[in-house]
Length: 100
Image (cartoon, rainbow, N blue to C red; front, side, top):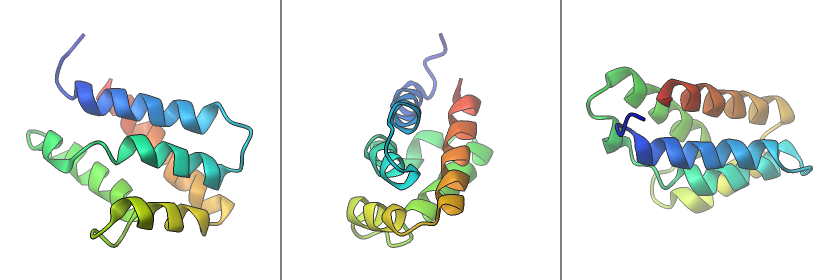
């Protein structure tokens, strides 16, 4: 298996598992997924401009305020509509697929 992006791949896989394996609302599942995603840094994608851009987009949707991303991501996800939360979940799944 390719070692490139192995940290990000592991955390995004855990995020997808959180999105898929819970009977909770999509917002609650997204909050659980955030716990894994926020362990990934944008610097991990320095060699790939497209992945870096896509990861930044996910982060922007999860937490616009960069000061305390964990708290902001939880508050943001909690106040998303179902449509908005599903859109972010789809981006997370697509991003994980691209890391494989």
